[in-house]
Image 1 (tube, helix red, strand yellow):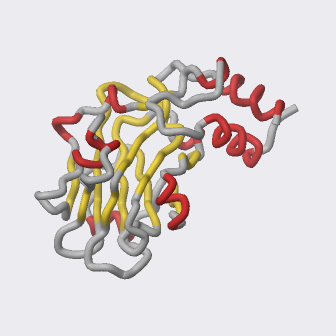
Image 2: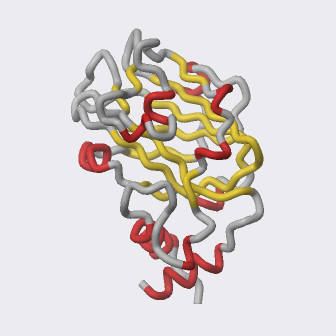
Length: 198
């Protein structure tokens, strides 16, 4: 029996409710955790950030849980974040939280292992996956499963937010959290077992 991708996504989502640093759900999800400890924090880059509201406000451990601080764009609504990892990772899912409905991003284009990406290439080049971001999901900080097979050997990930829901001049993001595992740790058989149970 091979579970459908929808069943896998449902199982993953059901395991990841809650705001802790580790994806919850018992024995099956033990390898899928918050990847913050594997991020090269010194090389994080965010193009078009307001220096008073930098990317560390939404990605930094501890500070990202404070709703009074946030990442804000500067000259216009676009943001382009690039994150490098200390080792190859498998990227499983992402949580994006934005409490201001009008300034919340409406889309994210995710690029795995992009080299020297800028706004022009982020707009025109095909991405690894694109997600529509609903205001409800952004307000709740819902964990969004990714196409796991497309993010198996990730050295870096770039997140391009082209626009927001209210056509505001600035986009505001309160929290970004990446979930996954180190290069060889995840057994997809575990996720299949969970999907079968559903």
